Image (cartoon, rainbow, N blue to C red):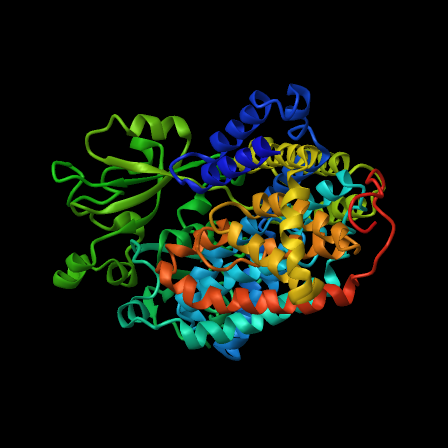
Length: 610
């Protein structure tokens, strides 16, 4: 027992040290368990081959399929419609959508998918990014409390409960508490962000982090559904920053009510993400891109280059040097330093395009940056050219929108089959992943691009949980909590256990905190002669309700783009976490009553009040 508790302490310390990679800490825990004699080598490796670890891997891979087909991006863009009514309407609908996706998919993956959409939409929806991104992360975390598959914490706790002889968590078993908890959390987050998050003047004015502004030409594709519609369907509906319409050699201002004609030319000036978003669309495309056959365009590599001071290309246009023939690449967009454009009006990119010049007719200047596309072989050859400096490749994969509906159907079918346990969840997940790859929703390389560190950590912690139970350390810790019963009652003990889980989730992962506290919670319930289920599920839900720091992966994703400080999360997250614990303390016993019952299978009657 002493050795087991020592390993738990070492595990907490290792998982709390940022300098040690989480996968290294996890494997070190497994080795310590074997060397200390707490588990056999076979038992130590059983966590990695468990049904839970395999199913979590397949869920992460299936989420990659949703991202590759642009499902979340499509939803995010449709939400811009609500910005016409008010910024608050857009914010509320965005958070509801993120929460809904996170209830069945990895909350970290959902946050990552919605982050670029939310950042780009914040200016159009007139919502400061710092008041948008923190609620975005919190809503994804709250979504994980609704259904079983919402977060890997639910799955590992469910598997551990089965090892204790308790029934697994049902697919929608958490919903009676999770749904009202998520709703209350979203409302509280919006109010707390408004009241407690300081609006720093320089950040409010600056908006998102500054990015290089590229200028390009876009054209409505033949048969485009945008022809005959107002420009606002492009600027507001698709979120593209249109600077003007070139019609009959004359540039028209970007009037939102201007009706677009077939194959209309638009001047777009925006960030790299804005330019890449045009490549994603079917009704509008980059003028240079449309000259390339569709099949070849899909296989093109994107690269960013600059014109150095010694380049012979300065002062000459792309047409003059026959750029496409010389390099085998096409120039999709160009960036020029804003100071250069403001001082020398003849160098203004938008002005040059407005006067009728095509992108290829604009003379290059020293320091210009070009976004180029072409075969990977020609991009490699470009690195040896002295006239252009390669800044780096641009990671881009066009979403497979035509398979979006199919991806949703595959994901939903997998979740239903696994939830109803028609077959093993691991087998259902593997089958769904294989169907995703076979139908072209996602390629195998992308599907396997999951965070393997999470899988390794879960396998190690499942082994640690079984070792703690085998040694009796969980029962020992539970008995230390029992004296509280006479003071605060069973509900108070539940609150203390959940509070301890939240505190542990600060230095370590949610899954680790839940698995360490689960044996303590179950033993405490049995020693009080009560049903262990409410205590186990309360611990599970509490692990997903720690909003104190930006260390949780979803919060870490928005920390930089939102320009937050560590104190910002303490200001907003502390009262939100307290509110969630209070709600759980009262809601959990209502759904899962503190009734006494028979001992779980395999638990001796002599233990506690069973």
